[in-house]
Length: 513
View (cartoon, rainbow, N blue to C red):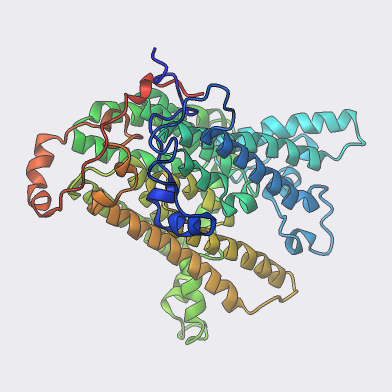
């Protein structure tokens, strides 16, 4: 194996410098002397310094550790579980991890699903039990310890490790663009929501699945995406774009292998609970069916605006107020239908685009569409989009605008929680404005990704790579003959993009550090 092939994430073949390629970063760099010069050492390739420790990848990993450490400090006021005088809201430190240790009976040694229904998919329930039951056992023999604090800190360690692993995956997928991973590492949303719930479990498993697909291991990719989908539902949506792209590239065999393995994985991990503890297993589905319109969603915003012109009483209701009173089944069916239409539109875009879109672009659009039309959009769901946004469109300007909107929503959300607890902080319109800003910025990101798909010469990743570094068997594959014939009218109107660098060696021959 050549030294270049073994370089992994520490020694990218050719690196992108955001101060030269990203307009937003280039503008900021003027404060410190401007972007990297044309003749700077290492501008095109890393300098060969065998004793150099602080490579770009290691700097990004260190920044991730710093962000997670600051997150732990930010959550520290709540770690003892003594939530008096709404400290969990006034200090912005509420976390489901600690609250549910007691609410789910883990502090009493109850086994998830067997002894208590769990509101999450089974892999999350298994994870809760795997960490919670040993803590309870230790607390039984050592009553002086604070079990809730131990449980939270143990979760913070594991979830933090998964966040670091996710950054490592981004670095491995973007060896020529290591600074893209800094968008995840320095994300304000990661800083404030990393351990609000167990979402990083699904994020980490999904990242591993994407990496396995990029390494041309479809069965392993399907297994990991299936496990991720059995932790939180959204990773299963990635299989749809994968299937559509494989259809266009005539690589259906590999996509079906991943899809079949994912389905099998979901069945296998669910059966041990679904068969003996059916009522407990059903709790997740019942909750999502019965759950009312949640704070911060499109439907919540619409209901608030309806309230400006309608009283909400029978005979004087706006459309969103009416839907709020008819969640099951009307609103549920409507959200499913809108998400389905969005998926069909994304599929049509994938098949008709002048150049086959990248997997990360479509995955981001599908997951974003799910959140936009969902009746539940919790504060930590930003973590679902975070790695996909970095992989889909690594541009700092729009990304930071979105992150600012997410932080504003985070702060406003805790103000709303205080208001619900009887301590009004600001009018509800402030919270609705923050929710609207979050919704708008996500929609803007979607629009920018669609623009990059329709005008691939503007895609920052394809300015560095020849095709799709996440694509696995799709990377560099020609379109199927039927796809070429079908989209020829679209292709004839497209503007050819500039020349791009030659494709790097196949990812499966690289050995990431």
